[in-house]
Amino acid sequence: RDAVLVSITHTLATTFFAEWWAQLGDRGTMPCVLLPSNTLDAYDALIHGGCDLLLAYADPARPLILPDTEVEWFVVATDRLAPYSSVSGQGPDFQLPGTVSSPVPLVTHGQGAFLGRITERVLSRRDLHLRPIVQSDLTAALAQLVYAGVGVGWLPELLAAPGIAAGTLRQVGDSSLSTPLEIRLHRRRSGRVSRQASAVWHSAAELATGGS
Image (cartoon, rainbow, N blue to C red; front, side, top):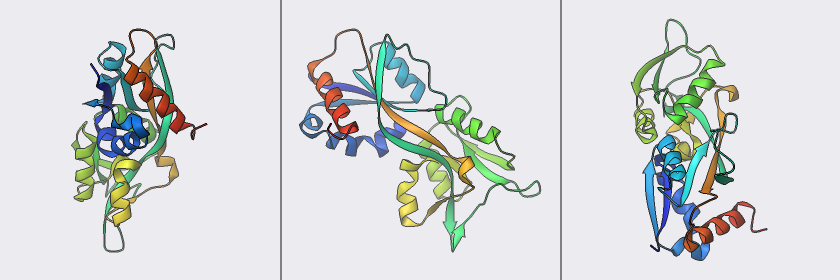
């Protein structure tokens, strides 16, 4: 098998992978099979040998516990999870924190989803007045709901960036309502590693450190 199997979360597959892969130079031209998945299933695929490499979000405040003897990783980029609203006229359609009499409509991940767990942790730190409207574990679906003006949603900045640039999305609330994310590349320490996957790993490490 010549193709590198890359397990990747849905959001990163559509927002991050193409530009990152192209920056790997010659390594970015070798055959690759993307295996999009939710975050927890993607980690499971790595542990059980279902892929060569894993590209996924990590929560630096509460990272998943992975056995160091089995998995190694490094940070390839950073992102930020924050609340966003659609924009009409001169400002956002919704503002946080909301009030008891007028709670802010919310589109959100389920608590079992990786980004949902992080959002719940952020919300637990503040007294917000929210009214859940739609729940989905597919982040891209939540983004479309935010664009459509259905409610506020916590989204990765990478996903919100086109809307921010176009003036159709705006971050709402203060800085305490956002939290950093890391984008990490992982591989297993043991087992057979293909020459192609090893080459991608080393090229990505050089890119992450600025070629040093």
